[in-house]
Image 1 (cartoon, helix red, strand yellow):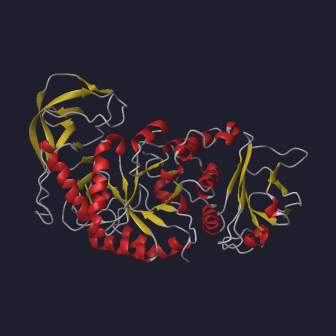
Image 2 (tube, rainbow, N blue to C red):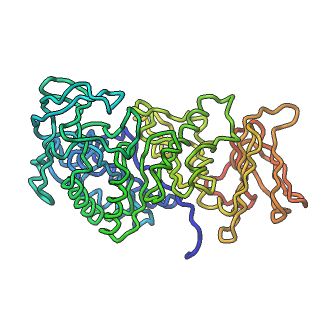
Image 3 (cartoon, rainbow, N blue to C red):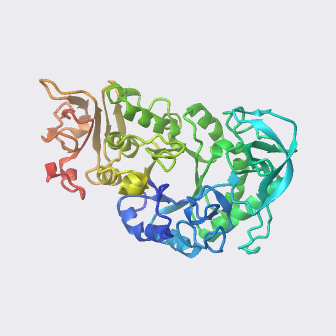
Length: 500
């Protein structure tokens, strides 16, 4: 119904260790109706183009951006996830179910070069990329990309050493390092870790080169118009010029005539740097990495969690409109370079903080939703219920009661546009003694006489708001408790036994 608020919810529709069976595009297409029913409004799909490792490439070892699973390259026609046709079908099926589709773009680097070239380069210190360890010397680098399997279809641009800034391997001397190609320089508007973090991996794309920029504009317009995706997730922007993306996104929006929602991955637990990258233009949103680390650290130290300040110092607090919140993702899962997996016991609490609050655009991890043995991640059993509460009841004014480090709450008052809506969420790490742990909340005069019941946690008795607008919510020793109106609780699809 027009004008009715929806709680936007993103699904990261993949994990790192999905089986390389070429079936994932088909799986997502089949899941589309179910995802819409669960309340998702968008799906972030993994990189769709050919990676250097062929069917075993998750997509971040970008080889040929023009090959969406159509050409015999890197030992395969299909990507890890399927063929170009299957990808486009999946996009259409998700959109037909009412979901927006976000494409994952990796423009920072290339891997899987077809030929080497002899070039001049200077080896830079690994921990200070501004420090030259020697004078420029000849090296042999993997810098020529001819894409023989595609044979010029769609585009005949050949990438060579002029298109890159740096590489990480000298074939001539069989030596790894960071080699800055002669005549190139690091961009200043990137992260300053290691002196300058322009270089990440592989053959680093020179975003300042006019031919490269023209190529990325041409490809971007083709890709977005050809696939019809609704937005993009940008990989590794910590290592990419801020000015490049301001210009490139503007060109993409002009080329497609669409708003193109965009979220960038700037992997740093420093809200100040994230705000710097957003700038005044705010051309994109960013993932709230500081919040993820708040969740991770809390999950590692159960007895010292400070719920009162769990959201302090995060991007969510500083700029909720341009924040995409998450608990875990493919990079934080076990065995990955950025491994910082939130412990399973804390995940329901973390998900309540991103799904049942007003601020931010929450992203749910595929492995947390379904449980994936290959990734050593079990499904978060509470997620279906939390998603249903978000979809149906987490509406209206939000009032926070973050007044104790070990016992906090927030209330969503509900909306006239959403039947039976409203919820009360309580986080606690107190232990009950003679009197059970409880929190008395000023619900307001508008809630006088309303009756509430715990649908997640340990409370069993109904709670009635008294004539002063106050209510005493008993939570026992539960760390997460969610209360709904009694009539809402009894209408749940994922209904707890206690309220049947």
